[in-house]
Image (spheres, rainbow, N blue to C red):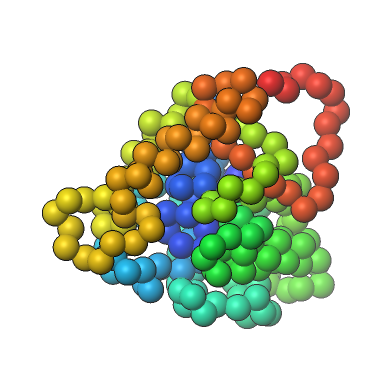
Length: 233
């Protein structure tokens, strides 16, 4: 199956939090979108790897993605080396996405920038035909990094005004991770009611920057080329 967009996250829930509305919008627009999780989030304070697996499957249904896979890298301890790059290369060549969405370039959780660099490197290497995997070489046209904990300045903001509720539902599918007054596990930075509110508030703030109801911001390491100005907000 060829995908238009492959959204990659170091942990299950990264894609939903950083680009959930974008994924929902692209699916609504008829694009084939998949999600790749690098780890099972097994070091998370709340829940377990097994609950994350179930929650990720529920979130994928809410977003309507065509496929979701998990590479099972070690949460907190995966590295940007040949072995990890090759696993991602195989996925990129399998689905041949035109666009890859991935973790923030800089962020509070060490796995986020680490995952960001790993995916960038794997996307480049995937285009080298002398790296043999038994698959056709493939390099995505674009790599866009969604914004996570740190409020980084985006290079562009996508209008997602009609899809914030879907994003919120996909995030809250991770029931063990977010606010639940009955959950007796330790609190974390994302388990407070204030953080839950911030999911919507950030989308509103980014939308305000471009004159729309809601937005999601992205960064890129290169340059975004335009053939014309049509489609700009």
